[in-house]
Image 1 (cartoon, rainbow, N blue to C red):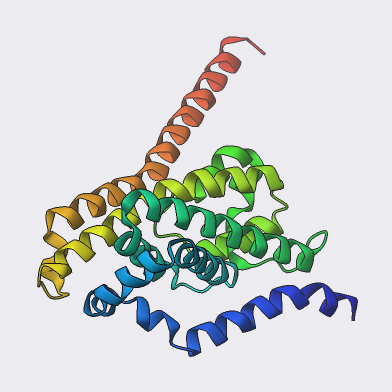
Image 2 (image 1 turned 180 degrees about the horizontal axis):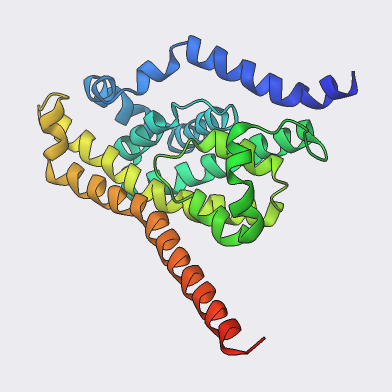
Length: 247
């Protein structure tokens, strides 16, 4: 009974995510839908600037805290509706708040630790134990990583709250800058009469942020390669020093 009570907040978030996806609300934020109704979107934003921004932040917070993989649609929509700078700012607020809610609910559900951790947490365990700050930061810098699942895994690993918030805000904002730029580029290209197709992704306003995002995804691999080389060099130096002294 106590275990169920502890897991209740996390279960409610999961149910909320299912309901949110089933409602079809994300269909309204599809790029082509935004372009088709861009006059109405602009009119609503100009008429109620603060309300529209609060609604966007609230919806992204809700989507993030439920762990559903549709937050990228909202982020792209934020770039289309508010531009790169404002879109990144509002998305950063929503993403950080939503991640914090999911993190706290997951940590409360797991308590002092689970005998059967999530599979992704088991894979991250050794790297996190050795270098918690660097490892947490780079987990947030991997564009293809499942944001919600990593949040749950970090909660099970008992990541300190200050570290989680700092890495989520910093790493998440860096990713959001490129993702919002992609949304702004898509919106600009679609507003000029182009259709959503594979050719659209070769537009200069889209392919630039996409390329930067691809390079960003290589950073953790580059850092890991440097770490392995240093570890191998240290091991070789230690072996050489041991062989130097006669037994």
